[in-house]
Amino acid sequence: VSLTIIRPDDWHCHLRFGAVLADTVRATAGIFNRAIIMPNLYPPIYTIAEAIKYRSAIQEVCASSEFNPLMTLYFNTGITRSLLQEAVQYPWFKAVKLYPAGVTTNSEHGVKNLKDIFYVCELLQEFKVRLLVHGESNENSVDVFEREAHFIEHYLQPLTQNFPDLKIVLEHITTRQAVSFVKNSSDNIAATITPHHLLYNRNDLLGHGLRPHLYCAPVLKTELDRAALVKAATSGDAKFFLGTDSAPHAISKKESSCGCAGIYNSPVAIEAYAQVFELAGELHNLERFASINGAKFYDMPINTDTITLVQEEWVVPEVMRLGDSEVRPMLAGEKIRWQVVKGRRYV
Ligand code: NCD
Ligand code: ZN
Image (cartoon, rainbow, N blue to C red; front, side, top):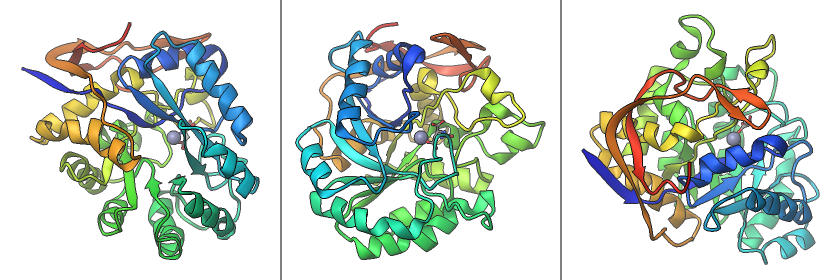
């Protein structure tokens, strides 16, 4: 069995910086034509000058001149009219990413009081810049498993009502509430879905010993939630598209008394998605999810070349070297049913 699809894009990806960059870029650019690059570096990407520098660093280590990194800025009060006037002149500038402070990796500089975001949102709407949202409430009183649903009800719902023309991507959705909110919203609201939220639930994370390598933000939810995500992703609905949220951390940072959130999945992402779609009996919708829906939402052309996967089992390495650190990828040591045989740009 083989499957050829239009070359996919990754609409949510963490490439990091420094020694690991060449390896993260290779994994992503080998398969994906474009990727939305997250700005949560230390320190975050706040300005266009910083985004230009980061983009050049990515292109410098990238063997493929075709790979197109699409850059984002970290939501902050420095997002002004003049900054956006400058930013929108760059075709690779795509969005501003909102992190509520404290809910995930490198979100210390995020927004502390979510009631304060309205002024910047008004500017984004005016300049037609997309808002990408890490949709989790950060109040201490909100249970970690309820953060996403709470955010949707208390912040996202009002936001979409106040700014009906603002295009928003609710990133890495994890709950049935998120699926139904996105489905019932206007066409300006869409969502990315990760491979790990399609594969795993919180029993996998906590039910048989603590699995630090399955710890990510937003945290894995129930089986009912996972099933709702699979249904949404595999339905072909234009509002849902591929975003790996691939987010590597060294093994020592994951296997720790205070482990980092983030799963490194780029090396197995498209194969894992294929497995999920196949199991759901919806393999014919993989191309929409991976290669069409996102491009349309971002008003970008559909890619013109293809990749081909075949059904041939292989075993994912237990450990991968990224620069000078070791990382355990998603599905480490496990068999995976699909393999890319054509269209991988380099190995
Ligand atoms: C991401 C990271 O490590 O940068 N971690 C994660 O668990 N997803 C940050 C993020 O996207 O929340
Ligand atoms: Zn992310």
